[in-house]
Length: 490
Image (cartoon, rainbow, N blue to C red; front, side, top):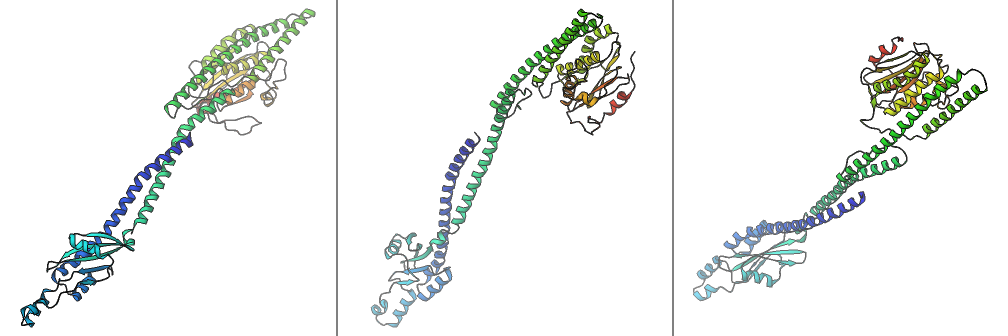
């Protein structure tokens, strides 16, 4: 499409340039010719006053020499157009009026080089108006002039071809340069217009390929010509619907996994209280096998899950609401096990650029680790700290802690305990890094593990300083005091 537009623009511009340049060149040629013959007419007019006064050859030669710019002028005086002063002198010298009055017939006078044909000169003298005629090397202007005797003299001015075409080469070169500049400029404009039309189409094609490859965050900027802009709107709407459908399925899978995790945890706790015996051992083995199967299903689903979160403005959730909802879910099991629970920072909305399902999965992973890897009665807490450019979610417990936080963050390794799939902390890490944030594991004020999720609000990359392989970031001023203040459970 881009080259087609360029070709069409070149063809149209070339036709326009030819349509205007050729007539304009012909006009310039005629103007140069008129200028040359106007100069010739001025030279001929300079001789006319002298011819009306005298026909003396010597006088006329001096006049012609002073009036003509070069040797291109000639004067043709017909026979019988003698000087009146010479005629009077003849009468006085002769006693016979007939002999003195005639004094012999006056001959024709030709001054300068004649280039025009005799018949052309005779025609001009007969018609009494100026004319031009072609001669070798150029043209001549034949200008009739009335003499005092009533006869008609002809002034011939030679106009060389070089004078007629003087400046035409430069004019044609200027016209050609202007034409080429117009064609080049039109090509540049057509190319820019082609790019403006082609780029949105290319982005649409690329986004369609990305969507087909499972990159569901692909979107097309809604810009360009009207048709392509409407196509982009339709594509984005379709992609949003696909993302929403997959998000709904993912939320459903997450809910089902939670529903399985809860009864499995209850079964494991009840099986632990059955005491000894074959039936009790079989029950505990069956529960352990069921937990392993569920872990395998979760691991497979996480590994095969495409990115379903759309990138752009408007994607996100209320972290405070999600924390309240999940804590309500886990509080029932905490009450059964005698665990003390504290929630802080969820009394007002906290918007974060994370999909609701992703935050739910991350919180469930962390809280599930607390129940699986700490003893009954171990307290835990969830705190949300809202800053200007980041939101921090802290999940802390009073358990034994994690001996090697760096190893725990490695995907697939887990803590080494039974029932650990090694995916919980990896889920949390990927959620934080998708916003430009990070995850750190440390010692909580409760005495156990503290997992800090840093969710960046402005999308900037984290500042890496290499502290034991972990990721560090400068904390907002409003979060520092809250983050470092000791916390206690009621």
